[in-house]
Image 1 (cartoon, rainbow, N blue to C red):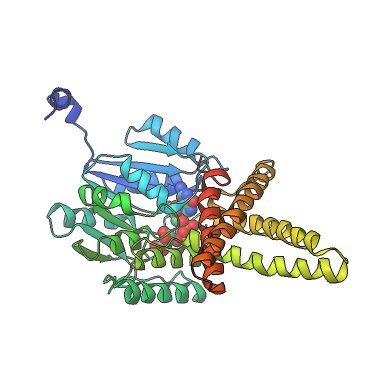
Image 2: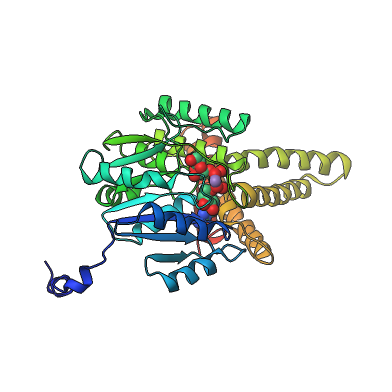
Length: 377
Ligand code: GDD
Ligand code: MN
């Protein structure tokens, strides 16, 4: 052991209140729920050494201020305030990594999960009977009665897909309520996706059946205050995760969306070309240039709303981003034509050369857009 660490751990006071369990709570606009959850945790976990880490994505309702205030009164309450980022999975990952307790739980802030199960979940891990304990709605004794029919249907469908496509063997891989051993989590963390909602599914799929798992039934309640942040985009997130895990992280949803948007640009281009030639009576060169310009613009708008919605450009940043996108795509066009020509030179098969050029273009545009247009802050 390193000398500096030995000195610190030699001090009994430093060890006195070390938490055994870190409860990680992702929050976005949960101001009114936070104090209630804190009280409930205090009751449920009394007698245990615990802490709670709220990870708030700079909520407009000031959730993090409420957490800070609690933290001033109780050292077990901690707050990670993330700025310029959004996402449930990423928040959970950072929350777990921000703590050092040997066990970490994830629970929603809105009291829909049953915090009274936590001691029981912990005891499975402490006794070494499991490495992961899942709060499950779909084992005997659990339920999700508060779901309306379309949400229940979507949940069942997603669970089925996860089981069949990814070979996941637990009953409720879509649950957002679970507890895991820190060392096992730290091993998997570099491979987890920070995008999307489905962190448990990601953990289970990434571990490839290597986590000893126990499921504990609970009843999914109704939300106390505020509203759900799950929108129709979760379906997309889910498909992206399944795709990424199915192809062993070769194909990401982002790339697929980017390529699909690019494909839509082809139709926009041809449509504009047609209008330019037939309606506006332009020369071919001008109509072609107009087509490229309009297609790049619609591609940018679609990518900003879909492909990069988690880091969407807003306000004036849209103009800067659009200009950068024009430049990136123009260079991409040269790369596209260059590759197509050199392939055609060697092997004069028009579709092969065309496809090689298009692939080069989309890969270039994707890589460069990520660097210069929608770069991570
Ligand atoms: N930091 C952060 N960032 N937190 C977020 C974000 C985000 O972008 N989006 C949502 N949250 C927080 C919410 O504030 C809440 O505490 C928790 O994540 C769950 O979000 P809800 O909006 O309440 O989701 P839900 O109730 O519809 O679905 C939940 O339960 C399902 C069943 O267990 C989620 O946990 C699902 O993943 C889960 O399948
Ligand atoms: Mn909820």
